[in-house]
Image 1 (cartoon, one colour):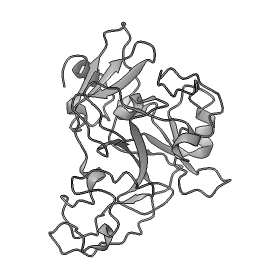
Image 2 (spheres, one colour):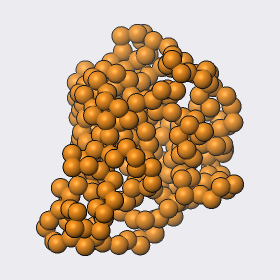
Image 3 (tube, one colour):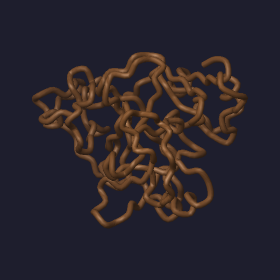
Amino acid sequence: MSGLAKQYAQGFDASIIFDSPELHNLRVINTQDKAELPIDFTYMDGYLRSTQVPLPSSVMFPCTCKPGTTCGPHCECMTVPYYDEDGLLCMDVARPIYECNSLCPCTIDCPNRVVQRGNPIEMDIFRTSFKGWGASTRKRIRRGEYICRYVGELISFAESELRCTKDTTYLFDLDKEVPEGQVARFTVDARVYGNVSHFFNHSCDPNMVIRDVYIGHMDPRLHELAFFAVRDIEPNVELTFDYDPSRVGTNAPSAAETSTFTCFCKAPNCRKYIF
């Protein structure tokens, strides 16, 4: 960490995780203007659960591999694998991902522990010419590679409805497992607490996709949100995903946000609005 990133980190709230592997690989670059990163933003690695949100159900099931080994074709969790032999997402996987958990006898090197191992990619938060802040990577990312999670405050849907009327929002409903016609019970708000995904912008032709991931529990209300590359991404190319619920399924910026926002992604297939 160097330059503006180091100065910025020194001004963070005391609750920041300074030994975060992501933060040590993060730079802040602004060659456009004199704007500074939001001073009220606290960098964190996981969910900050509000008192309105229960602890996830502790129901878990172990895999059947031998202690001290890694899961392979013989293990039931690898019958229809989520990842290939290189740890890349099988792109035909649209279903939720259930990674091995603390009850499983396999080691952290298990091929079914991709998201929980993390991926300390060298990232830049940079000032764009017309979209505010954005984020990019300093290394080439392969198609299917895990990038990071979307984290922030975990709040009730009722609270998210109140917040979206007051300020620019970074709300993400955990509604993948919600029956059609019903609303999510819980929402992730990354406006004040979050990681580099706070700075991911929208594109109508995104280079990332989000998948639901279960790691330490199987509670369908409180899954993790993980970003994966949908194509090879070269260094210094902005990281983007599609905010529109109709384009990325039900996991999308909160349904409580009803305003239409103009899109500036300039993709050939740009639909001229974000959501």
